[in-house]
Length: 206
Image (tube, rainbow, N blue to C red):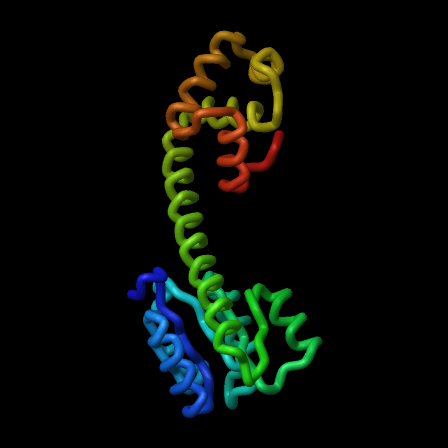
C-alpha cells in the first residue's frame, strides 16, 4: 500500500508501455500492479481492494470500455483513468458518462498522468469512507423501533411536531420524545444531519 492510500492497477496490452508506466508511478511512491489484459486483471482483482485503474481502451478479447461496463455491473467502485492511443471524442464522452474520471491520450505527459492518478486514488478513499459511513447509518437505523422509523419519515419530510402527531395519532410530547431518541440513536446533532442521513439511506419522503 502506498502513502497515497491505494494501489494503481495498470491494464495495457503493450508490454513496453506497461513497463514505462509502472516505472514512472513507482518512482513517485505509488503501489502498482500491472496486467497485460483485462481478463487477467479481472481474474486477480479483489473487490475490496482500494485503488484505481489506469486502463487502455483498445485491447484484444475484452477492451477497456467493456471492462468498465463489467466493473460497473458488478458494483465495483473503482475509479478509472483511461489512457489510449486510439481515442476519439465520442469514445471519451462515452467513457466519462459511464463514470471514468479522466480520458488521456498517448503519448501522455508525466505530470498529467500523475495528477489523474492522485485524483483517482483520492476518489477511491472518499468512496471507501462513504461506504463505511453508510453502513454505520444503516446499522443505526436498524436499531430504531417501528414507531421511531415512522416519526423519522415524517420529520425528514419537513413536518412540524404537531403535524407528525396528527398524522400518527399520538401526542405532540410523544413526538418530541421520539425525535430525541431518533437523534441519539442515529448519532446526528441536528435535523439537517438527520435529513442527510435519510438521503444517504435512500429513504423516501412522506
